[in-house]
Length: 198
Image (spheres, one colour):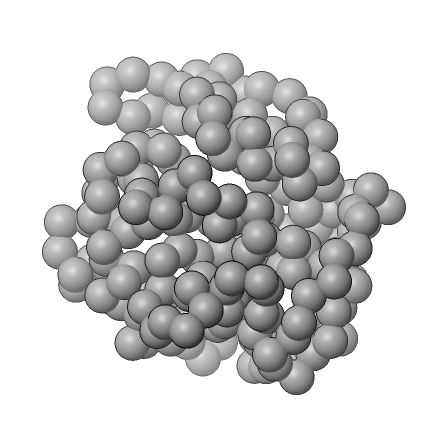
């Protein structure tokens, strides 16, 4: 698939407990509940959203209005429910190098339940097998132990540390770099709820 087509026809995926589907305007309330949580925002060095309008503007940007190709954005929904509890995305595309960055966040009420460990593999398979990516990067704060543990469980390799790369609340925080190559990825079996099989 040409990556441009993905911006128009992004598939959904079903796992054992989850539906991972494209972001919709109707997800604003659920996304605000995540982004307004100080603990979630602190995990990636940001201030929490103070109003739903702030989240709405960001959501509209993530939906790639005409002429913009910034990210491919999914939300994570427990099976049988409608409200999103998290999100995953590809962004920071470098198409000439067949590379993109992976991002993710999760409502704090669901931390420690293996949700992202279940949600991310179909997105990685889609990136490598359908979008034609050769490399996926992730850049958590060095002090974000949960995110780092998740990346290592998914097979990402540590590549290095950017010292004091992020300024947050009057202090500087190191940023870690991890990557996963197509040749290193072990495909997983997922049920596809959209038009693209992975």
